[in-house]
Image (cartoon, rainbow, N blue to C red; front, side, top):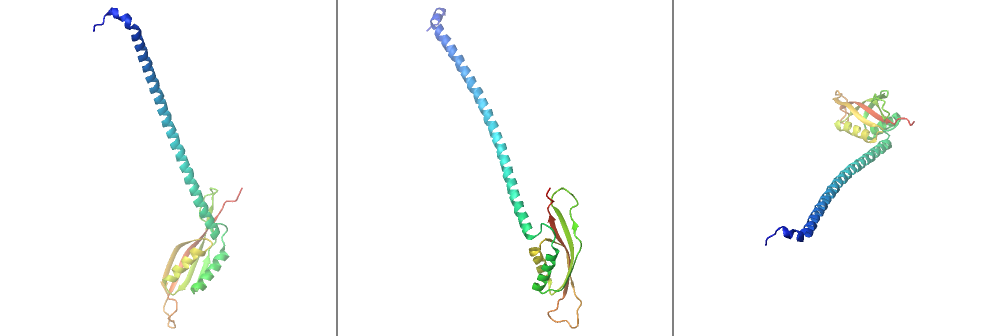
Length: 199
């Protein structure tokens, strides 16, 4: 079949309709692609915002957990008597109780004046230490470890052992089999914490 110029008026309407539909279809495709790009950008922005919110939520949960742990630690230290004024009379009583319970001989101690551990004044809690020189006669090394464990578990302070030394006592002619053979000599810090005064 041949197509010549005489046939053009017959298909002009159809050709015009075809061109119109092609341009409308192209416009619709361009419109759809633009809306797809906008929707994709909005989805990426929403995902980024959600990730940021999730990160903040995780951070808040971590901080909440940390605060809970610190609060529990603070309560435990407060219950033990570590937080607040030092309680030297309680320390002395505790040493006497341990001496009697462990049957330690010739237990002697000297407590130095309290000193501040941290020089800064940041407004937070302040740490204080009272140094104690402690000596006693021991039957064997375990007497020393038991005494230190008792102090750490029962003292109304945090007990930090700076130095401890055991030395043999000189032999005595009248020594009985159950006599102490060692001299324990320790330097111990009794550490307490004071909260800043409320304003």
